[in-house]
Length: 99
Image (cartoon, rainbow, N blue to C red; front, side):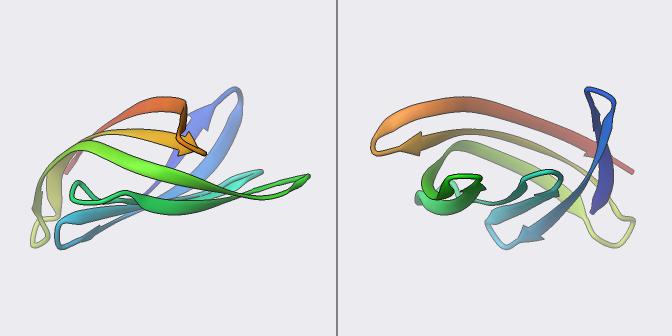
């Protein structure tokens, strides 16, 4: 699924892929984000900054999805945290409904 995210007067292309039990979220803005949201294990995201690349842990607290690929339609609800060196950088929630 692809859509444009509108925030602070800017458009950011977002792509969401549904893979078995996980969700892949890719944002292509001023900073590219590539998240693997897996409720069974933490994953690692490489976050590029002007000072270099940071490895962030992505901890998915909950992931619920109901997707009908034939229509396509569905809904996704995800709660996750980003951590660096064991410290929480932020907690996030994503809710998508599409038809």
